[in-house]
Image (cartoon, rainbow, N blue to C red; front, side, top):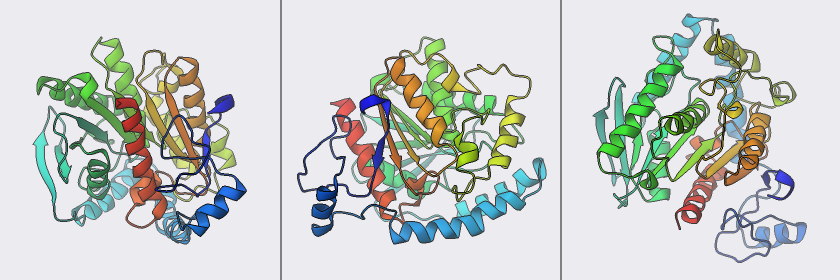
Length: 353
């Protein structure tokens, strides 16, 4: 990434054809010129220049039914609980294809976590996944379609953690659950180098807080980290919270800032639990950062990438234009979501050798 800028994904991505200009960070991702876009279009390798028609339709649907539901929910606990109940019902509707196995497990004080296996995963490796949802909704059940794709793409079992949620609990409780889950994997015989930790949105924030906490406790770090549209600074002060407030089809900036103030109340601005981007990033493992160029968290992720690189961290930062927050979650509906899993797999092949 020259000059510290993210790779801007412009919708022509080579899969089988060999196009010139390979980036050293993600072997299957190639920067694209106009000529290369014409070649890619001729070879039908992928959508060109702008989000796919499917992504645009999904974005409109989410704006109408997702963002508006959050905007119109009452402030305070009542609104959080309302959204929590709706997403819990959605979680009960999730199905997985044949060949995918799900095994529940309770770890520490957390809820019912799930081991998700797709295909024939390499049991010597594991991916601990921390779902998103602003720390107040989400569950392994809701994330089953995402988790089986993640297991299939990375060829390893995924442990999806059912960490405790607001308003009954706090983000500090969620971090305790994540530490317990990581310790559980170590006790099972996995080494740090066998573990990858990932998360999206608030789960991306929790991933970074976990990395900081492991370092403070002198515990072995994971081999790599994957953060999808991570909410890296609960202070919500980055410019894109204003600049992209209209273009973000899912997250109302006012609601997110209100959550951040609630979680950070009485805490110092540089507390790595609440704003891990402001903490000491030295010694963190290689990380893949993905975000949309039109979401309000765009600049938070750019800031994290720049600070982590300055601290000597191996960072792969991809910025995908025109997509919904945490777009890989919508892989059942949009081709860009499916493509994201190929980039995740390529990133892990590179860092794991």
